[in-house]
Length: 76
Image (cartoon, rainbow, N blue to C red; front, side, top):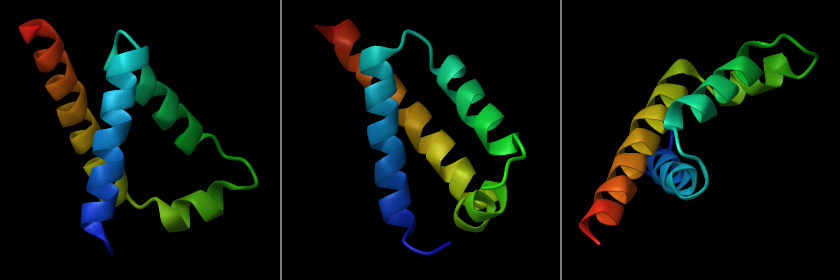
């Protein structure tokens, strides 16, 4: 997994965006998983770029970003 910090930063930003525009993080992740597991003609290209480790890191950091945003909103 090259450039783990970049992937983690992207995941954190995705989590903040989800927190701003969606009420639940689960719907967004279900959409991502559905898109990744639908077999179409671009699936092999996505599979080369998005390995399991990268997907797991994005999901974890997005959840942290979502939780951070919800925590900040509850304090205000």
